[in-house]
Picture 1 (cartoon, rainbow, N blue to C red):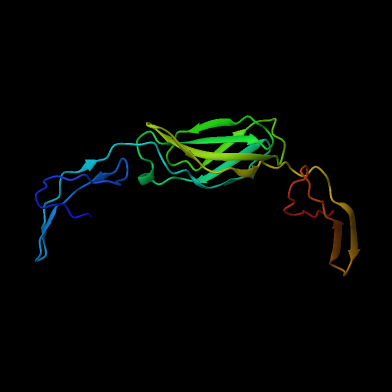
Picture 2 (cartoon, rainbow, N blue to C red; picture 1 turned 180 degrees about the horizontal axis):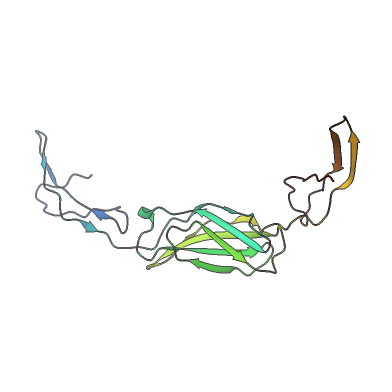
Length: 194
């Protein structure tokens, strides 16, 4: 800290974090050295302020059909800057000009799920997440692209064939389902026999 003139009896401490409790001590010094610190002052909490840090690691995707799942890393308590802290989630279909806004009032929240039957599977959305407290709305994250939930595959694999390789084994093969917006990502196949 800055050294204060020996005739001064007060000082202004700057660059403190909003809505944080602090204790202060004073230490006298001269050309010989530094003396013992004073007893700590009483706890003093700085005033609240609008949050200045947006959530990070905006992501999501997955979920069920007709859902848009949005996730983020929660803002730590020391960066919330006041009471009444929560999150503002904004999203729009890619190419749209209108943002949909949702408020998530829980401090611990790290996820928001938007459900709407009009959402087609694997639709891209622009998403940003911001913060607010009783002092007002803070910053928003940069835009992330997140896809809505998938539907179950709408087509069966083609070209299924079977080849007997032994008395107890049959090799089954098929053509993979090509990826597109309607089939989604095929994670696996199930082979049934009767």
